[in-house]
Amino acid sequence: MPIFSYTATTMEGAIVEGVIEAAEEKSAIERLKNTGVIPLKIAAPKEGGEKSFWSRSGKGDVLTFTMELSALLSAGLPLDRSLNILSEISESREMKRVVQSILKSIREGSAFSEALQAHPRMFSKLYSSMIRAGEAGGVLDVVLDKLNEFLETSKELKDHVISAMVYPVILVMTGGASIIVLLTFVLPRFSVIFAELGSSLPLPTQILLSFSNALKSFWWLILLAFVAGWVSFKSYVKSEAGRYRWDEFKLRVAGDVIRKLETARFCRTLGTLLKSGVPLLQALNNAREVLTNRVIASGIDSVSKGAKEGKGIAAPLSETKVFPPLALSMIKVGEETGQLDSMLLKVATTYEKSLREALKRFMSLLEPLMILTMGLIIGFIVVSMLMAIFSITDLPF
Image (tube, rainbow, N blue to C red):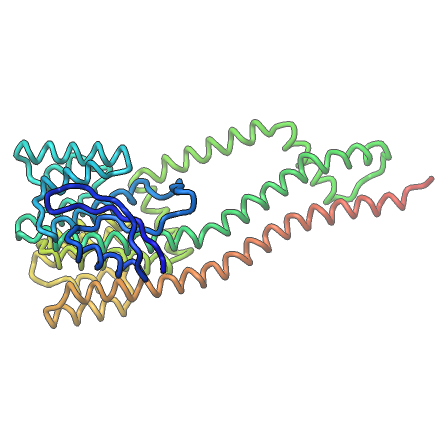
């Protein structure tokens, strides 16, 4: 039977650590609860007790903080004591400092949501808005539980997108390195031989050797031009007009994947906010902030205007023509039945699954295209060299 390590706290706030034997993680949690302690962390211990380099960072700290605070508040501990416990057990120095700062602000009379707003790099406006709604309704533990689900789902989706891009990135890097090695190290050796023979080389070989010589002689200038171009592009994309045009281009290239990704983000955020008691207009503004594509985000402004005029969100969303028809139909049904929050979460779940399939299809097209492009470039180099070698046989001896 697996052995799990745990960190827990008593109702008095004392931290206890140890190991427990259980069939699975849920069973371990239940066994700990039956002993009268509040489980904070449950994990199967790693061999040698080493901690993974990737185990804690950035948003992972926020997810852990939310999960542990939700568990403490659900068990009936007051907020200040819960935060004090979290500041003691936090393994991240940055998170420990942030929690201590939040605790200090609360003891000085600030609301929890106000204390969170002092750390915008760690806690987003969405996070603060949901906490504020939980404070107003007296259901902070419930809101934290929903926030925990939201952050876990968002992290899972982000990790899936990143993992799908790993292979194409490696392919480009290795293919590009191979081409550079051929042009800067292999070809110059052959060019010396061809120069000594004094024969006229085939046109493809001449072009290739000219490019190789230019790359070897002016690599610093090419690198400088590349860096300047990249900096100019980044500056252009940071401007509102440039970002909008770039997002339009991305929609034309990978519109299906981007629309599904943004639909899932928007619906999960809006559904979670509404379920937590955040007013519709405020929820729409916060949900708009999670959209990364400016073309799609700009359409939400008209949705907010329509909601102010009492039109709801289904009709204004349909007019924007940025969301898929199925999502719009489901949102309309949710609005008509008075279950908009639940339906939005169902839409998000549907499109998160659909996004995974769309990513697989997109990668199934992108990977062969990249392999074909690299193959054509390397093939041109090889064929050009072979043509030159074969031309040697035509030389008079």
